[in-house]
Length: 221
Image 1 (spheres, rainbow, N blue to C red):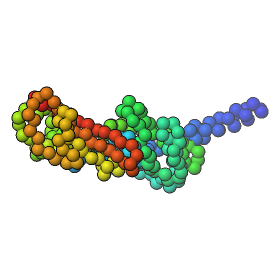
Image 2 (cartoon, one colour):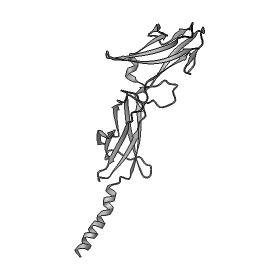
Image 3 (cartoon, rainbow, N blue to C red):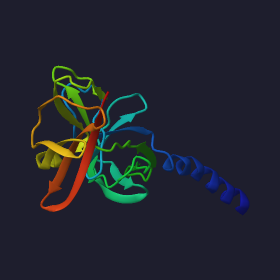
Image 4 (tube, rainbow, N blue to C red):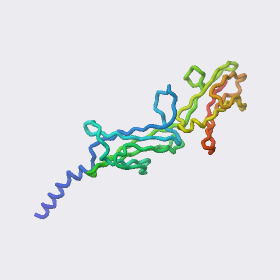
């Protein structure tokens, strides 16, 4: 009789135990980076090194209806390390410290309710190095070559630079080893030989600490 009572007690506990392991909700995770892209760019702005990224979650029930998050506990993980948590904490922000596109970054959210049920969701975030392109004025196509002896008006555009870096960028235009323009967004250029290339260097200096150069080359044909 005692064995039957023990078996019955275990059997009655099984449904609640299974229920405690599974939260019948779904969280849709999204990310947004604070990097610059021009108005004509139609893709999503990608994060780059030292840019701010915001991750958010929208919670749905099994029928697809939005669920209030105030009674749900959010535990946010960045590459397996807890970085933020709290009831109703539907979003958090962080600074992306990656230096190369080969470095991965995974966000995980562990969602819990007051009954102890929980569920985990994950999200991988892409990465891009800051980029600069040179193009003729009046065109949105990047320029790879210039014809010798042909005068052309040139400008440049930046992509995926952290917003705070844009104020510290200073352009230097070189033809071969010769500086032909400094601190100018647009130049008029007429190459006289095909031995050298046109180079644009963007110098980034923030708070007088550290200097970094971003460059783009256009060859003369």
